[in-house]
Amino acid sequence: MTPTEHCRVELKIPNDPRALGAVRGALQHTARHLGLPSSEEEELIAATDRLLRSAFASLSQSQEILVHMQEHPDRIEIEIVRPANGPNEWDNLRQLPGVDQVESKTAGGETHLKLVKRLPGTGNTPPHPN
Image 1 (tube, rainbow, N blue to C red):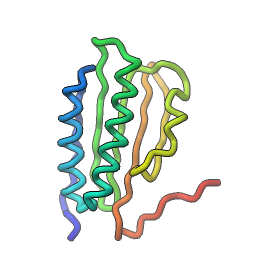
Image 2: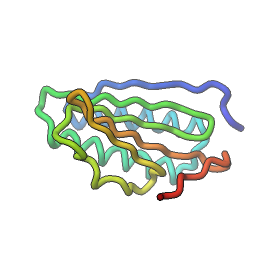
Image 3: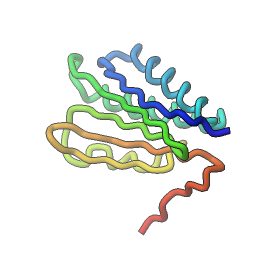
Image 4: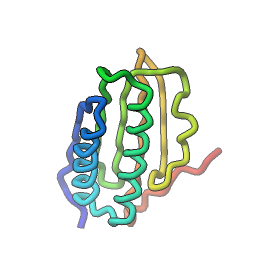
């Protein structure tokens, strides 16, 4: 059964590891709402957690990260926005277990990293590399 209502969650996370629980909880809720199998949910949460911990390690204590989660009928999108450290700073994270697609860009002093997880059974297949 596919949910007919989809939501967007926006979280502003302080540089404090305890705040990661809010992201995990919101992502767990989103994954379960869309019917993502629990093993895939766990992988997606672990990948997001890894990225956030990595981002926090390079930020000052006063800096924050924005996390946006968007539900779609065929996928979950998670966008992480943080102050930029330099161009292509997350290029080494293109292959993450539990994530089907990773997009990144740096603009206006911020780095945007988008994770896409496709939902099984929706006919949505990952793009083929060129």
